Structure formats: C-alpha cells, structure tokens
Length: 365
Ligand SMILES: NC(=O)C1=CN([C@@H]2O[C@H](COP(=O)(O)OP(=O)(O)OC[C@H]3O[C@@H](n4cnc5c(N)ncnc54)[C@H](O)[C@@H]3O)[C@@H](O)[C@H]2O)C=CC1
Ligand SMILES: O=C(O)C(=O)Cc1ccc(O)cc1
Image 1 (tube, rainbow, N blue to C red):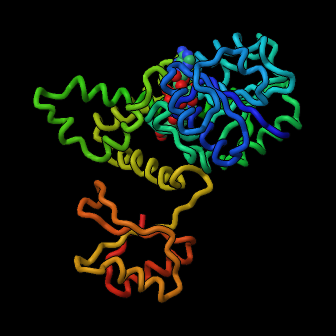
Image 2 (cartoon, protein in one colour):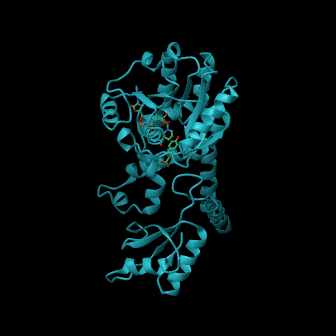
Image 3 (cartoon, protein in one colour):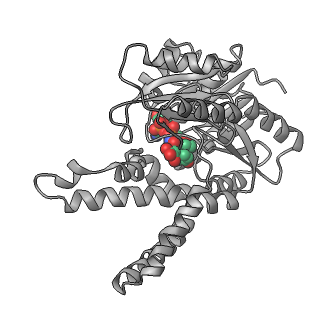
C-alpha cells in the first residue's frame, strides 16, 4: 500500500515525533497537520516536516491516505465526528491515544469501523509540545494496534508493516486488554507519581527541606509527574473504570504494607521488598524499547592526560570496537565516569575483563 499523503490532527510530542519519523524515513510523503496553536504549525512548516503553514479545517484532510489523531484522548474523539464527512474511501483513520475503549465506542457509534485502526506507541516522555518531538522517539518502542471487527486484514497488515518500517514494534491486541494493561503499567504509576509529589508539596516546611534534599529515588519515581496535566485529565476520564479498580487494588497493597509495619512483621516486610526487587530486576531495561539491548559498562578514569586514549587503545589493540564513549556525570557517578558502549555482549565481557586486568575499576549495571 502506498501512503502518499498523511494528515495529523494534533502535532505535539507524539504527533510531531510520528511526523518527523515519517519524513526521515519517507521524505517523499506529503504531510499536513493542524494543531491547537498556529505557532506549532509554523515551526513544523519551517523545519520542512509539513507542507502547510496555516491551521487546517477537517475538509483539508479529505485526500489523506492516513490520518493520525494526536490530541488528548477526549479531543481525538470529538474530532472523529467532525472528520466523518471528509474521510476518503480507503483512508486509514488512526490515533495515538493512551486509552482505546472510549474511542472504539465512538467509532462503532459513528459506523466508522472499516476506517479505524487504533494505535498507541508505548514510548514518550514527561515533555509536551512539538518542540520536544524527535524523529527517533518511537524507535524500537512497542506500538499497540487495536483493529475493529470490521478492519480489513490486508489493510491491517499493511498498516502494521508501515508502523514497523518506521522503526517501532507493532503489537496487535483488543481495546479492553490494552486499557487493562495500560491502567496498571502507565495510568496508575502516573497517578502515584503525582500524588507523591503533592504529598511532599503539602507537607514540606517553609525552608523546603524535603524539596532540597530530595534524593535520586524520589526523582526517579516522580519524573512522570511533570507530564501534561490536560493529557492525564483526559486519560483519567476515559479509562475511569479500569483506573478506579487499580486505585482500589493499590490502596489494599499499601494497607497491607501499613499493617506489616505497624505490627513489626520483619520477615514479611523483607519479603515485600524482596519480591519487588526480584520482579523489577527481571524487567529488561533498554534505552527506549524492547529491541535495543545496550552493551555498556562504566569505568573510573585515571586522572591523567590521555586517560581516554589509553582505554581506547587497550580495547582497539584487542580488536574490540567501541560503539560510543563519553564522560558522564550523574547522581550515581557525581565525579564523572567513562561510559563505554560496545556492539555486542561478547565484546562487553571481553572489555570488562581486559580493563580489570589493567586495574581499572569497572562498573556493570
Ligand atoms: N506524552 C506521551 O508520552 C504519550 C502520549 N500519548 C498520547 O498521545 C496524545 C498526544 O499527547 P502528546 O503529544 O504527549 O501531547 P502534547 O500536549 O505534546 O500535544 C497535543 C497536541 O494536541 C493539540 N491539541 C490539544 N488540544 C487541542 C484542541 N482543543 N484542538 C486542537 N488541537 C489540540 C495540541 O495543540 C498539540 O498539538 C494523547 O492522546 C496521549 O494520550 C501516547 C503515548 C505517549
Ligand atoms: O515518560 C514515560 O515514562 C511515559 O510513561 C510516557 C508515556 C505516557 C503516556 C503513554 O500513553 C505512554 C507513555
């Protein structure tokens, strides 16, 4: 299937990243977009991602082969009604929203099932807006597709292959399974992060002692509390039932822990953390998705001129190619450490053994 012209309604972090990815991989595809703000359209026109430089009406999307709805979830649903009269025959209507049940209900009510394939890239960040969009955000990320009962199989496969050609990893499932899973692994965590931040905001003293000394753990677990409030307001309204069930289940979990602490049940408290650790350790951590495994180690730099060159020479003279190398400073390595990325596991293991042989301190994570 040849997708020559693609439209975006909403061009923020996700819509903008989709558009930039498509332009990178298929520079000949014409992309058009509308958004809440003209400045977004101007920016995307000026960087040559889209071909229009004004806000568009729904009729302007009538010759698109694919239309991606990329606004907050309830706004996407509103747009479907407005778009209906202008969908050309064979156009694929899709979305990138974090909730799928609601939009499928509207699609059914509007008898648009043959046009619609729901979508949800499982990547993103706490940032918002076109300025945060990148042509690589969705690379290697799972991209869930939720077809309708009336989606043509050939069309579904063509769309799935197109998503794969953009570098994401398509996964087909039904809307209910999607909403149940995302309520657990995404929606509840965002609620917990925000509630934790609000708790600290409300209980901190006038010197902001808590905010000042907030350690890495607090920052790690609350990064997503910086996400768009309007986006999360829409998600909570749209996946209401699943989220309510999860909040109840989580409240039970907290109450159980509360009782264990109150009753000083040391063995059970140990088990609580130990079970969590084992399960968390079993979750593969990759930089942005399921495919990319990073083969990296961290090495203390000896403070002398040519320190990096010495390490590079040791590796090169043993036929180990370096994929990436650089000094990083973070919470864990405040004074800086050399991050070395290799191409494969065997090379990583050899590099670690070699560097240790030369008395470097090497950290694996
Ligand atoms: N932020 C993330 O990490 C992820 C978000 N999503 C989903 O992607 C969708 C978009 O989210 P983001 O790109 O993060 O948000 P964003 O805030 O970066 O962009 C939203 C876009 O929708 C437009 N918009 C908002 N209200 C509008 C209105 N009333 N009329 C016209 N345009 C309007 C904005 O102008 C902007 O172009 C949401 O449905 C969200 O659930 C999916 C995966 C990850
Ligand atoms: O930044 C993060 O870790 C996220 O969790 C981003 C995110 C937000 C919403 C989604 O529907 C999917 C991914």
